[in-house]
Length: 362
Image (cartoon, rainbow, N blue to C red; front, side):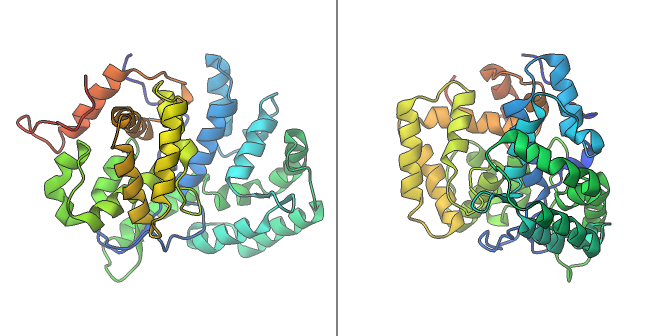
């Protein structure tokens, strides 16, 4: 497999911003349990990417067209194809914009997003209230029907497209405001800052920059799937990665399906490995704190006969997280190519004399 070409014309530079509440230091000791219920830019990007994977055309030219429309932030977003209603209902569900219990568009997520990000938005509270008023006029809808949801959403979108894109952090102006603010605040230790995942930076690389200082001497071994004896710092590091990989649900429970999906992408998912993932999740669920739960799950997946499959799946996810071309172009798994790219990342921290004994077998 040739190294993928980055599709920069489809994914704007700032759509890779990750907002993470933290202390001003990159080596924050803040817990992950105080996470806001608002969706981050990575959350809303993931919603679009996953739904794109599910419903975009498999034909190259049409897939590129789907990407340019669905991953953008203009009025072509709802351009009708036979795939658009399915894509839109998928996205709106993942954005928590549909309340399955009441079968209505959920105004609460709009208020949550506005309250969390209003300092970077250019739309006003009045704009949000107008959006909400129009939602209330729609009332109940058939939330399980793709066409019904699409038809109900169309007038909302065309009347409030700017508000929609800004609230769900798909507008490049908002993301630029956030990025500029981050640079300004980073020089002032008295102000709340946030961390930014740079374009083409993997989730693991991003989380390595957030690691506590005591882990830095262990980073080569950590990348080789060893567990540092600095337990609390290791827990926070794995929790950071699990959030970025979407291995945690919004309620902080283990997302078994997302983990199983990574096994499937490398051709290693079967009934037995799925059952093992489920049992690991059950064991991890006994931990009340998210960092402890994350490390327990990680350690379990590294134990037993499926450990090499997990390492392969984890490596492939790391590479994909730094290169959206894998999703947009539907590129297949090539073990040798992924291993080469992972070893290149390892060399940023490990010299030639340090053996990567924890890496999956040849």
